[in-house]
Image 1: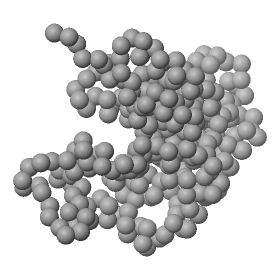
Image 2 (image 1 turned 90 degrees about the vertical axis):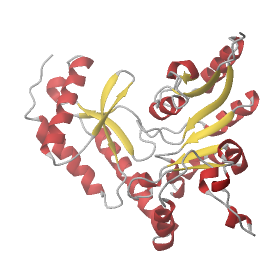
Image 3 (image 1 turned 180 degrees about the horizontal axis):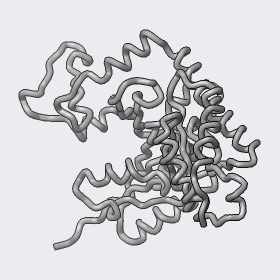
Image 4 (image 1 turned 45 degrees about the vertical axis):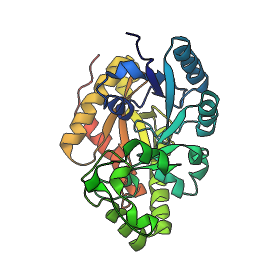
Amino acid sequence: MESTPELVGSSSAVDQWLTSSGSRWPGRKERDNVCYIAVDERFRIRTDDLIAKISADIEAGRIPFCVVANAGTVNTGAIDPLTAIREVADRFQLWMHVDGSYGAFAVLARSARKLFAGMEQADSIALDPHKWLYLPVDVGCVIYRDPEIARAAFAHEAEYTRMFGEEEDEAFVCWDYGPELSRRFRALKVWMLLKGVGLDCLSEAIENNLACARYLESMVRASDDFEMVAPVELSIFCFRHVPAQLKNKSPEAIDAFNERLLVALQRDGSSYLSNAALAGRFALRGCVLNYRTTLGDMEILLEDLRRVARSIPISG
């Protein structure tokens, strides 16, 4: 029997969870159909590597069909070169999907809007209003440039799912545009937010979150005991604590110290950070997604880290 050519999608090497999970829905192993693309010093997809790997897949008899670009990665908030990726997608006739789950709503902030140039050219965009629209979990969505493509993929033909109406919107049913048949009214939360709060207030809140992350970065760069591990693009900041006693220690010793510091900070309960692995190094990771967060909270965070760090022995 002649084998069927293998479908392959391309995605950033630093933001793998969503893409790899989605690729396994059909029951396939992730390595079979996801090609991870190298990133630059700002953790953005390198289009030269994207072109090279798509070309290699074609040469090997596989069929590239999709490229997933990021409008704010979950590790660092990096935004891929969306316009350039659109050009690559057009060149190879690929579907361009943008993962904007975390970051895309920052387009509402005037100071960040230019970073998202090209996002409007995507074939589909994933969004999570429960992240940067401040809504309770869970509410997510996918926006299609041409919704009829989604309908062609997901529409049901069963008689009991047919809807009748004289107007087009009367016959609209959500299960014709996605994998869920039964689901709760998630969209109500978004509608109420837009009606009750409005875009101007949301824009102001997002601007404040961006300012908090930039302020944290400025304090870290001005200090002699912290260092940034990645540049701040949106409201995510990745950094680490390097007190004087660690200045001449190995990178592994600095990683180990910051791992212990993270656990101690979480146990302390004063501030909360998560972690990220970037270019082989351990980083403390913070993400500002609360409209109540202030610049003062950023100062408190560094004070908490210094205080907690004094109780951690340094080894290595």
